[in-house]
Image 1 (tube, rainbow, N blue to C red):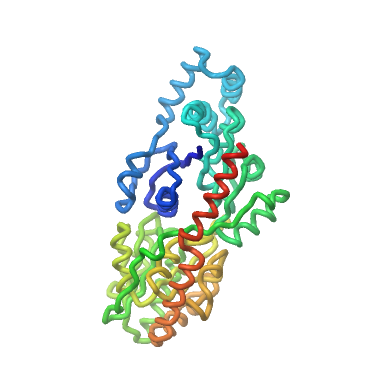
Image 2: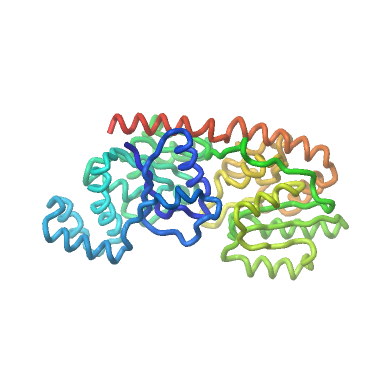
Length: 396
């Protein structure tokens, strides 16, 4: 049997995770789900039965007390107790405690393999479970969890080496992993984040006032400051339009101040976070979707933004930047337009072109939905992951 292990599940900011688990269940894989931490942002569209079935680990303080007591009583094998005690005050000791506590419970359920998302806390806990109990693991690497340096005692190379297989969500990230963690090419597989494209409602007729929509956390790598600057350029050309930026995050105050400084209060609206049904409603009446992603100072970037797939599923043309794996999603001149990052003037030109050429925008949108069905449908992606998990379970 295979199980899922997450750091925090289900989470509003990681819709692709609970979509994957739901699609796995829909296609016959009823893997139990464990989460190290409890979420504080359970998404409203997450199936109730899925959220109810999640098994949570004790909070860190309770887990530490329990493990100390049980270890002293000799419930756990002496090598595990010794490893935990000898770890001392080095960082990430919680991963050892989590692995020691969870391993016997998985064994009792007949779980032989676990799959984690992100090269982070859950994957590191899985690494220790393999060391302690021989339960094999795999993980899906996404973006900053791989690209940004970590001070964890377990490196990305350690996680890749110990894994039965690794999923990269794009050709870009697979190539990056092969280059930066050499010697493991055969175990690194590209599987796009999938979603139920066929069940995603297509956009209806655009609103009377042209409207562009952007979705994402209010953080640097989304490039929303460039989008606001591009809107200022377009307003200077007397174009009438509306820009809706859906999200929330640490840059909200700064972005709102930028909107006010540029006199765009009647043009650019920052809505704050919205549930998935509201996002779909906004997409359904939009003229186009814009997400001008950028590389952050520490190398962090979006690799394959799920919201772009959602916009394509809705039949919207997409304007984004020529960054990371985005060109694997958006075909320049075929399903949308790509510009260089941190170039608000070029971004404004691309937006203007599609606002003034609605027929071209509609053609891009229709082509984008067809591409989403071909490449990003869960009917295509889930069977590939399912086969890898089945092989790992047999091998484990």
